[in-house]
Image: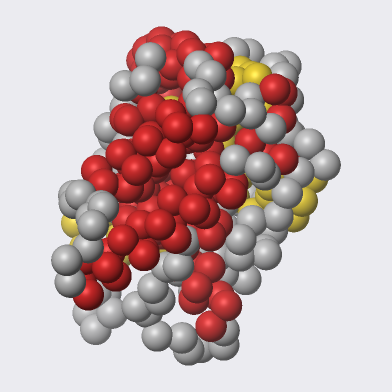
Length: 339
């Protein structure tokens, strides 16, 4: 169960259900107070001293973080560890992200029986073309077991479980705040980190706008796809195969590039008049990588997990940190070279 959502955890999501099928769905983005309610985060962390069971002797400089409603021991931490309560996390999000009235969340919840808690705030969005919205988020991730610092960072990943949380946390932007006295005083530093990321996001929005305006001929599109395929595979497509190995490589390249060309006719590549543009070409590749490419399932099924679960899980991982992510990164770099 790599999503790490247990029966003692709660997840709330806006609009659409996640791949794991779990969580409470609200029709639209929601407030931090709604997150506390619907994700069942209205519990606190209490700290209690430790003692050796056989002798009763106290363990100096260490305490146990205990979840108030379940009495679950979430972690053993140093006595100077400062707990960031879930209610305080909600307040922090409101104060960092544009004021309490305006903050709307995409997802929120806890993982691993409450050891990790996160809130994902919608920050900015822009339209690559009419009806084609690109959304950026601010992730606020906290742990109650001492394993991680409190993180505030920008991301384009919709965090819905442990897999996507781990993927988002690999980002180098944002800040990490130690669980110590005064941690709530770093609101301005967190705000600056997200604002700096917004500047980078503005550059990305400019790039996307340029791609959505860059018209390509059929010959241009096929040339772009061939270049992406060759760069991603670090090979040249053999035009005149001299042996079975080269013939097999040509057949595979022809099949994959053919899938990308076919995706240009998908309604998702026609929305807002982007048909025939570099943005449509890029999205034809990412659609294939995200939803159509064959992904190997290397993890055995078990514990009630079906083959479909394993395949879906493997695809999620590959999309964000595996070979599918590599395909998309190459496609974006090659698209940027067109402008």
